[in-house]
Length: 384
Image (cartoon, rainbow, N blue to C red; front, side):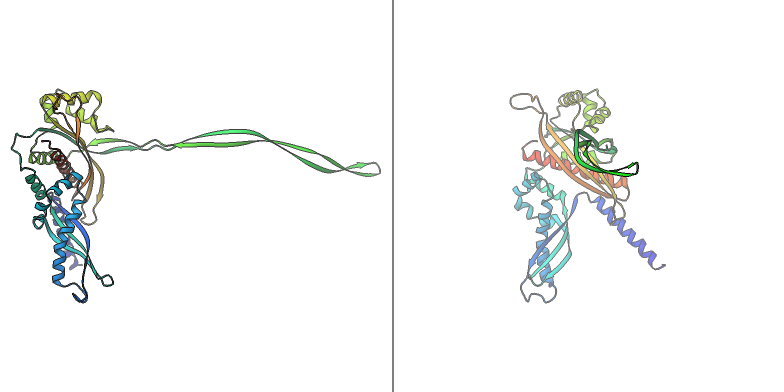
C-alpha cells in the first residue's frame, strides 16, 4: 500500500492538471476522426513502418478538418468554402497535437484502419475568416448590437397522469330454450311418474365500452442562473466582428424606465422565447431610443449535469436557442416589424472540478458559440 499511495496522488494530480487545461482551453476543440489507408504487399510485414505512419499522419489533419466541419453550422461552413485554399494552406497551424488513438491492420483487405485525434485552434480559424472578409472593423464603424442571453435551468417540473374517459352502451338480450323435466308424485297405493315439457326464458344486458386516454404535457418552471463571463464572451466575439455591443441592462438603464429584472422574469418563463405584448412595446421603444439596430435574445438552458468519470469532475451540457432581429431602417423608411436575421439552435458543454465551475465553463462556451454563429450569419448577409 505504501508504494501504491504515491502513484494514486500523482494520477489525481495529472487528472486535475489535464482538467484545468481543458477548462482553460476555450479557444480549442478536440476532434476525433477515423479513416482507412490502403497499402501494397511488401511495404511492411506485420506492422506499418515509420514512413507509412508519417504519411498517414499527414492525411490525418485533412480528416480531422473534415470531421470538425461537420460540427459547424451551415453559414460558417459556407464561409470556409469561400476561403478554402487560404484555410487549408494553414492546416498545420490550425490543427495541432495530432495523435494516433487506434491502428488496425486488415490484411485481407490490405488496408490500415486509423483513428486519430487532434486539436483545432478555433480562434485562428475565426481570425482567418474575418481577415478574408475584409479584416477587423474599426471601432465605432459597426452597428450597435444589443443582446439578452438568459442562462437558466429548470426549477420544478410537474407531470400529470393520463385522464381516461369511457363510454358505455347497454343493450337488452334475450334467450329462449326448450327444457324437459321428469316429475315424480306420490299417489295412494304407489307413485306416478310424469314427463313435463316447456320453455325457459332468460333476459340479460350486454355492455360495450369504448374510450380514450388524455395526457397533459408536463409544466416546467425556470430560474435564472448566475454565471461568470457569459456577457464578456459575447461582447468579445461581437466587437471583434465589427459590431458595437451592449448588454440589455445597459440599454434599459439608458433608454427606458422599466426594470430589467421584471422583463427578464417575463422572458424566463415564456414558451415562445419572447416578451408579453406590453413588454414587447417597452423593449422595442428602448431599442429605437438607443438606436440599437440588432437585438439578440434567447436562452442558454442547462439540460444536463453529471459526474465525468474520466476526470472525476463534472460535465454540464447547455442547449442554445437564440434569435436576432433587425430593428434598423430600410430603404423605404422605418421598419414597422423587426425582421429575424439570424438564429442559433446548438448545444455546448463544459467540464470543471465543481458543478459551479463546469456550469460557468459550459455557459461561457455556449455564449461564445452563439455570438460566433450570429456574427457569421450576419456577415454572410452583408449586415454590419
